[in-house]
Length: 137
Length: 382
Image (cartoon, each protein chain N blue to C red):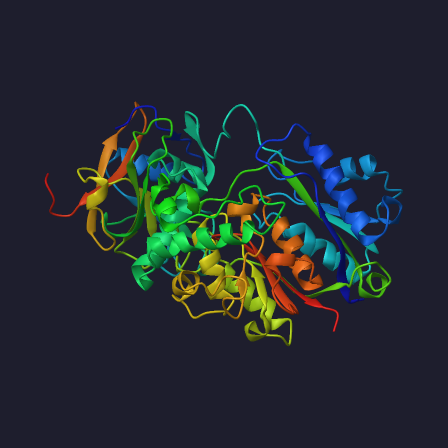
């Protein structure tokens, strides 16, 4: 599945997220003042404006909020493949773009419970994929 | 200083799937057409606005030189995420209203990168910025981002693929009566379902049709416009908005777009309401975007856009408000909504022949999808 898919180029603000993936932890930036989770990572809180933020580990559980099955071939991907937007259980609207492992595109439904699965795709990059909760191991 | 403003001229360059002319040439042709329509020349122009986009067009300075504009008192090259084609029109209307200039050209030209397909966003070995969270999962195109919004709308409101198909069919029906539309052969639901899937729920016929071409309008004070050859089309309100969480994935409610906020703002600046509309040219980079604008403008209730298109109400003569009377971007060509502006001007002048909306007095033009939206309310001079 890895192939030649594009890989992230972490920067000062996003490095913690990718380091977390390498350590098998899903880390999301969180506001120390109001408790809001912040994704995509930015140096200020979208809810209260505070800059007092720190990465915080989340459960990795969520549900499929929406999805699309892309039939257009892109470098590194074999079409058709599903792109899924997962909403994490920690906060309404806290979402990650991902792919579902062990699931064919026509099995995907909005509302399906999913959990994170980390998979190393290159020497230095591990991606946060998801799979259906309780599905085949 | 705020002065009433009107659109006094509008015109296109050649528009077709593939043209030999440069972006500069297409721009000059479109500007000449708009100036001729307004009964003036480049010597009368003192303001220019455009969206040069991603290297597919030319700048204000280029245009001023190539047209022979004596001097610019105001110019604005617009870049970045924004409702591209409508943006220079809004900017120029505000500049004239504020007294920054007297006669402004606003244009959008699109010259496609021929030969190689466009690179898209975020391809390549390593991807930074926001795209580092999308590209590794094959989510690099606006088509997949907005397909996910459309899917959510289908889930919450029961919008169907067949209803999306009716957006395409309606556009093509109108394009069949528009001599400058590049796609003019009527289509059926069978044609729609036979077109290849791009990214679900979008098929090829849900997408806009890439073309080369340009469109321009002349904007001036209502007072000056009254002395020009055509009846002035008055700019009654404008808006240029996003909403909370302006991010393609974190946006609060994926069943509405920035269209919700741009519509609210546009209506708050006028005495008119959605009940007054006769025609609406709604941005349609993908079919579902028009549905979303239709609902967010308040023409129909949330979730009712699908039935509006499927029952034929969006057709000229079909319902209260005719939608995308030139064929939109889907059949009229992807000019980033400058064609939507031009069509609305021609409708309010009563110049649209077979596709003319009877006694059209009030029209809305919108552009943008997802996290950005711009809207224009245009009226006859009444």
